[in-house]
Length: 93
Image 1: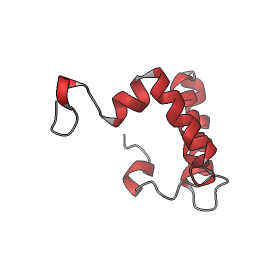
Image 2: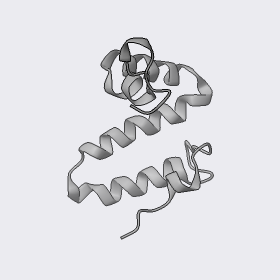
Image 3: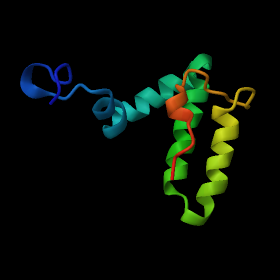
């Protein structure tokens, strides 16, 4: 494992392991995001991305457009201005 991602005993302490892969960690982190007004948009984005990953191929383009306008566009209803331009760039190809 990369340095900084384990502690004594070899336990993985990465964000992905604690807040995405572990159900209780994911639940607690999502509740934290949802409970803080400044992070509510991030919580909503996370939920919408998970829904996007589950949608049918035929629905993906429309879903992606809704995500972009809601979260990635300045002035969008829940603009996530903390995201980098690389994170919000349209996929190539």
